[in-house]
Image (tube, rainbow, N blue to C red; front, side, top):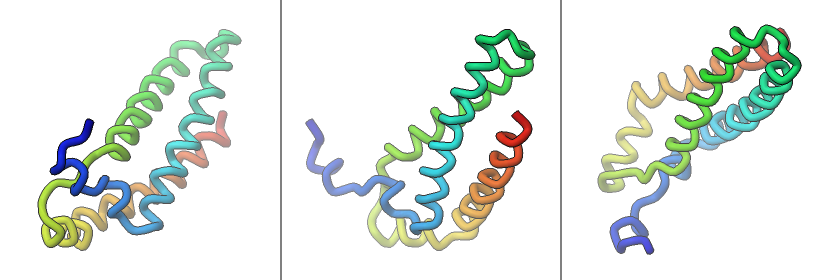
Length: 110
């Protein structure tokens, strides 16, 4: 059961702008698809060592996305808004978009 404080605190994913949220969710879906393809290659004994390393990286990122999407945003509304408008958040959002594009290229190579 959630405490009163937890009920008042929004999830981080619900606070970010729509593009960032969509990129996070899109990356999550694409990584799940990539994971399935890698698992199939491993089961077919196709380049097992390399694919196992890639699979570990994909699993790591999927876990990080899961933590990010369930993260409760701390601080008051002003602090949260200041963070969302900060340079570090803007850099995070841009990096996420770049990584999503790189993921498309990686998937094509498989």
